Image (cartoon, rainbow, N blue to C red; front, side, top):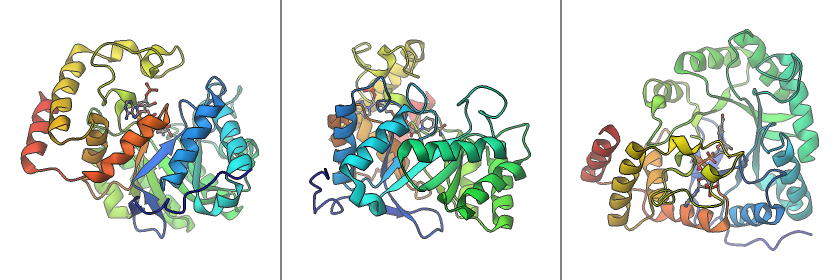
Length: 330
Ligand SMILES: NC(=O)c1ccc[n+]([C@@H]2O[C@H](COP(=O)([O-])OP(=O)(O)OC[C@H]3O[C@@H](n4cnc5c(N)ncnc54)[C@H](OP(=O)(O)O)[C@@H]3O)[C@@H](O)[C@H]2O)c1
C-alpha cells in the first residue's frame, strides 16, 4: 500500500543548501531517536512519518542504536517505508550513524573501520535499503586514528552504500582534522550534527566558524532541548512526556527551577510573537544562515504540526534578540 501523498507537499517548506554541496535539506528534519522504537506505538510512528513527508519534510535521521531496543527504530522505519512510501525513496534523504555501543565485544562501539562498515551493513538490512543518503561517524573515537574512521566513511561512499558522509559530536578542532582527511580522500564532509539549542550553545565557540570556512552544513540535534524548550514542563512533568518515561534520555533532575524560570520568560516572548515556545526556539536557531536544518523529535502529529508553523515567523527584532540573550545569560 502506498499512502495518499499530497500533491502540495513541497509548497510550504523552505529548503536550504547544505554547506557548499549540491544537496538541499528542509529547514525542519525529523529524527527517530525517541518514539519510533519497539516500545512505541507503530501506528503513531507511521502517522508522524506520513504527516512529515506530506509537509515537505524530506529528511529522516536514524542511527544504528535508536529504539529501544537498539535497532528497532531502523526496523520500524524500514517497515513503514516499504509498506507505505516505497515509490518515494528518491524524494527522501535518509541518514544513519555508528559510533555508540551497538553490540558486545571490541567491534561494536566507537570508530574503527571494522565497526563502522559492519554496522552500516546491518543498518541497511534493518531498513531494507540498498543505500543511505548520509552515513555519519556518530562521535569521535579518541583511540582510533581519525584517518581510519574517515577512510571507513569514504569507503562506504565508494561501495555505493552511502551517498554522502557526515560527522556528529566532533569538536571544532576534530572537525577541521576530519574534514582535511576526507578532502584528501576525495569525499567531502557534507554535514555536522551537533547538539545545539538555546540551552546548549557550545557550537558558537568555534565550530560554526569551521563549518562555514569548510563549506559544511550544520543540522543541530535536540533543538528543543528534548522538549524543555516548550511550555509542557511549566506545570510539572506530564504523563507520557519524555521526562516521565524510564527509557527517556531527559531526566526529571534536569528540569531545574533555574531552567523553568527561563522557560517561563521565554514563553512570554513567544506569546508576544504569537507563536509557541517550540516554534520560537527553532526559529532562533534558523536565524543563523550557517544552520541548514533543525533536527527535531516528535511524539505526536500535533507536535509536528505545531513546529511546522515556525515557517510563518522566522525573523526576530533586535529588541527580541537582546531580551532572549538576557534571559539565557541570566
Ligand atoms: N547525533 C547525536 O548524537 C544525536 C543525539 C540525540 C539526538 N539526535 C537526533 O536529533 C533528533 C531530535 O532529538 P530530540 O528528540 O532530542 O529533539 P527535540 O526536538 O529537542 O525534542 C523532541 C521532543 O520534544 C517534545 N516536543 C517536540 N515538539 C513539541 C511541541 N511542539 N510541543 C511540546 N513538546 C514538543 C517531544 O517530547 P515528548 O516525547 O515529551 O512529547 C519530542 O519527543 C533525534 O531523533 C536524533 O535523530 C542525534
